[in-house]
Length: 364
Ligand code: MRU
Image 1 (tube, rainbow, N blue to C red):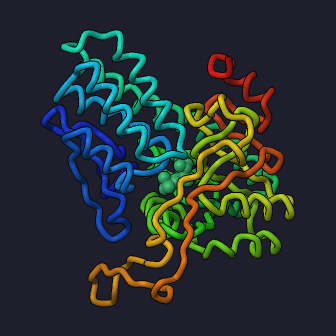
Image 2: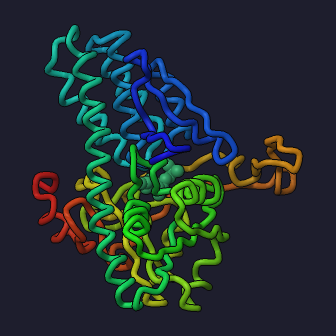
C-alpha cells in the first residue's frame, strides 16, 4: 500500500539489516508511527498489545520474533522457549501457530550457528507468500464484484465489511480489502460500509483510514446498522476476513461477524469470507465448541480513546464506576451461513469436502 506516495508493507527489515520495523497500529488513525523490534520479547509484546494485529500479520511478526531470538541465542532451549512465549501471545488466530510451526520445522534440523540466517530467510518467505496469497484472493474476489457490477448494469456496488481484514491486518493488500482495491483500480464503482467494530474500533480507526488512503469511497457505520442497511437493499455483498476457519468451513472472526452473517442470510445478501490457506485449521471440526476465543480486558469495553477538539489524544470512561464487563474478542459463523470462501486457489464452498479438495496437502 502507498502512504504519501511511498510503498509500505506492514512489516519489513530495518536498514540495519536485522531489526524489524512495524507500524504501531495502537496509534491509528491519528498518528502514523513506525517502531523497531529488536528482541523476541518486543515482538511478543507487539502482538499481545496489538501494535500489530490481524491473523496474517500476527503470524509474520511471530516468525520475525523467532529470528530475533536466534540472533541473541540460537540454542535448542532458546528456540523452544521463544516458540512458547510467542505462541502464548494471542490464542485465536491460527496463523500464529502456523507460522511458528513452519519456522520450527525449518530451524530445528539446522545447526545453531546457522539458525539466524535461516530464520530471517524463512520469516521473509512467510511475508512474501502472504503478499502473493492476498493478491490471488484479490483477483478471485474481484471476479465476484465484477459479476455483481455487471448484474447491476454498472451501478455502484455496496460492500459491507467488519473489523479490519485489510492491508494493516496482513503484510500487504489485505484479504477482505484486496478484491475491493482491485475492483476500484479496475474502474468498477464500489463503496464500502465499514462496521466500526467495537470495542477496539478496527473499522473506524484502521479500515476507513486505509480505504480512504487508497481513494475507495467508504462510510463508517455503528456495528448495529448493518442489518437495517441490508433490509433496505443498501448492501450488495459482505466480505469479511477470518482468524481461523475449521476443516468444515466454520469461520471464526472478530466479534459481531456472526450477527452480520445472520442478517445477510435473512436478507439474501451474499456473505463471503476471504480466506488465506494458512488460516485454515484442519485439526478443528466444530468451530463453536473447539476454537479458543480470546477474552480481552474489560477496559476495552469501559473506555474509549480518541482525539479531542484541541487535538490531544485522551481516554475516557463510558460506564459507571465498578461496572461488570465481558469482552469476548471473536465469534464463530457456522459454515451454513457462508456463501463462499475466497481463497488463493479460487472460491471454495464452506464444507469439509470442498476445503479438503482445494488444499489436499494441508487436509491430510
Ligand atoms: O483482534 P484483531 O484486530 O487481530 O482481529 C482481526 C480480525 O478479526 C480480522 O478480521 C482477521 O484477523 C482477518 S485479517 C485478514
